[in-house]
Length: 246
Image (cartoon, rainbow, N blue to C red; front, side, top):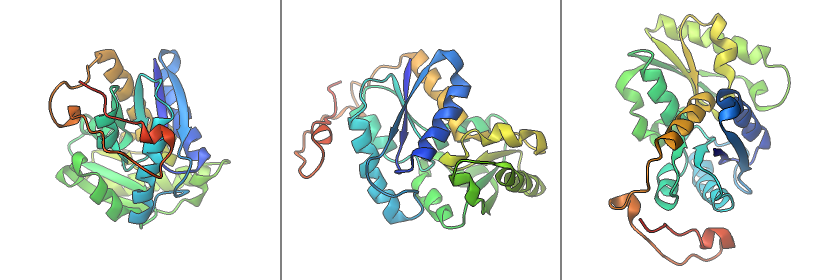
């Protein structure tokens, strides 16, 4: 089983962080293939970043077709629907997977994100997750060390403190938003009063489950529509990235 760890931004460290968490979750049951967007924002923080990253991640996917599933290593689940339309393998958004798993642990979810700027973008780009439905609280924290290799003790301390505050706000479970926080749930769990979920582990497990289900490509419906609109000014791989026949 080969699962593509597909990063929408251009920071290889983010790809490596998510891939490491995925490998820890999958063990010997799956091979993780890494792919980082060739162009676009270093880190997605704004609407413009996200718009450009959508092109970048679809282009990267067009260059990595020989896989059994795709896990979007971007917490905005960027281009999820577009890739589901064009690919005949499961496409998993890391945040949709982590929200689903968090809901199995508690009735009310507390969210932790890095920095204050992305919160509005999360709410705009994740309507499929229905975050408002069971939102207990949201902690936007500053942890710049999360974005570079090295000691993560300061990052984990900030995350642990946010978990405590979310418990005080009535959360039953904490969800760590941000691809760069993949794998952090296991590190902070011992110091958190609540269960903690992150998208790297949740996405990997969900992708493996979807492959095991062997769900076929839809033969009818909106995701089975074949569209052959010519493209110009894009990579050759993307120009040939057509929706497969059902």
